[in-house]
Length: 122
Image (cartoon, rainbow, N blue to C red):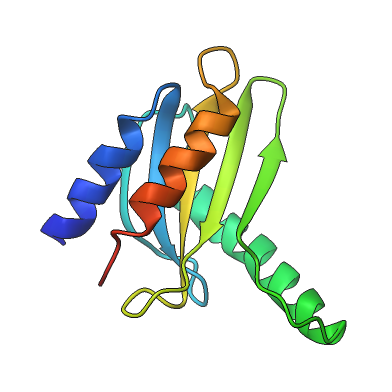
């Protein structure tokens, strides 16, 4: 778990980040979480696992030969980024990152999120 805690710290170091979690897609359980987004990250992790499962199911139903890279949910005050992990040792997981819309640079945050995602292994 120490490695996952380091990943959370790296995610929270992204400018504008105020919450992050590494989540199991099937159970919705956060394996690691941190920050102060103003809501319960564990509840959000579980809810967003439904979003990821629905999108993965839709891609399968459409018989698309493609994969989800990330999902962006835009709120009035926040961006919620979901990055589905695909590497060996992290399949079945996603990163959930909460960004403050005022202080975050969305393009830079996505770039940094991908870089951090490449380091995750369980």
